[in-house]
Structures are given as structure tokens and as C-alpha cells.
Amino acid sequence: MTGLASFNLAGQRALITGAAGLLGREHAAALAEAGADVVLTDVSAAALLAVQQDLAPLYGARLRIQVMDVTDPDSIKAAAAVVGQVDILVNNAAIDPKVTAAGGLELSRLENFPLAEWNRQIDVGLSGAFLCAQIFGTAMAARGFGVILNIASDLAVIAPDQRLYRQPGVAEDEQPVKPVTYSVIKTGLLGLTRYLASYWAARNVRVNAISPGGVYNGQPEAFVARLSDLIPMGRMATREEYRAAVQFLCSPASSYLTGQNLVIDGGRSIL
Image 1: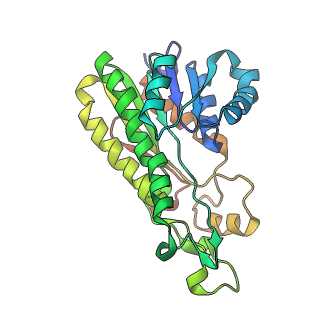
Image 2: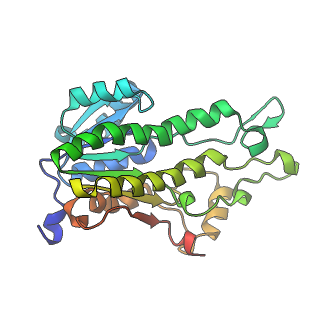
């Protein structure tokens, strides 16, 4: 296939982790639009059902939901047995760490960050991607075909600018920050991408990553203005702007691309 026909995913089954999240539903819409049958997975049946109902008017016949916990190998294996063959895996599940305070301590700061929270977030965002790749990717390799897309972030290639989160009148050692886990997890996903791409290259399993920039979702006006000032294009992304990239990376249109990270951040990381 060449040209636009190479974006056609009819007859392929895609599975998306963390599909009830902000971008998860956009990935689902992108792949369903390209013709794929899409399995939406997450830990909450109610949240999955809400997404399925939102997308049903356009893609209802191509969507199904499956509760799955990416931190639990047994849960993934059980889902795999129900779902059947998966041709495309989108590792999207993650915990978006929020800046929080407790007992007078700003827990987002490195010196106060709880080990339990470090483990919890890495379990979902990084170990979860490994486990899903291990289970679904191994089956792909056995069949000699498959695509894995890891959802990273612009903060996998640049450090967080902690000035974005500063609050006026707050002492320096109490200022909220973007927690360490986010950058570590997203950077780890790039390492996993390269490893898997090399590991399964001879088995016709392609593995790539996408690193989105910040998506506007009703954030405070001051934060949006600060972040927009750091982006050459002068704005945050809309949630729909990553759909075409997902279609490209998951389809035969990118048949000679593996082990790569597509950064789509309005130019922020080039400065």
C-alpha cells in the first residue's frame, strides 16, 4: 500500500491502555477512524463505559471495553485471553502526578517525595508498559507482525521548567514542582522503545514512541500563559492534534520506522 491507503487499519485490532484518560480516548478515536477495531482498557469499568458512550456515535461498532490493570500480569493475561489477537498496542496508561501538600510538606518536591508514590507511579507508567509489551508483544513476535506505540512526553527529552508551577508568596522550599516520577517514567519509555525495537526487529514488530507537548484542558490561565511563552508556536496543543501522528505510527504508512521518538511539542524542545 502507498499514499493514503497505507493509513488504512481495517481488519486490525488495537488495544489501548489507560483509555479512559484525556489522550487515551483520542488515541482510540484516531485508530477507529483509520478503520481499526479498538479495545479500550483501564482499571475502571464505569470510566471505560463513559468513553465508549462518548465515542459511540462515530465509532460504536469498532469499540469494545475491557477492564485491565497494567500493574498485574494476571489481569493482563486474562484480558489477552478475552480480547484475542492484538495487532497494535498503545501503551498509554500513566498516573499524571499532581502537586500536593500534606502535613505542611509539599510532597511534589524531591526531598519530600514518598517512596510509596514513586513505586506506584512507576508501576503504572513504566512497569505497566513493560508487562503489556511482554505479553502482547511476545504474541506479536510469534505471529511475525505487530506495532507497539509508547506514549512518552516532551518531558522525556527536556527537563520540567519548574517556574511554571511557582506560587506567589510561597517559601522557596515549599514551592510546588512537577514531580520527579513523570520525567523518569517518560524517559524510561524511550529506553524501552529502543530496546524492544531492536529486540523484535527481525520478527516484524515495530516499536515507536510519541512525545506530546502540553495539551490544553482548562488549566489555570496563568499556567497556560507561562507555558505558551516557552513554546515557539505560542500555544498549547489541542487534544485532537496528535491523532494523525498516532495513525501514522500505528499503520503501514510508517512501515520503515522503528525505535524512534516523534516529538510534537510546538517547538518547545528546540530552544
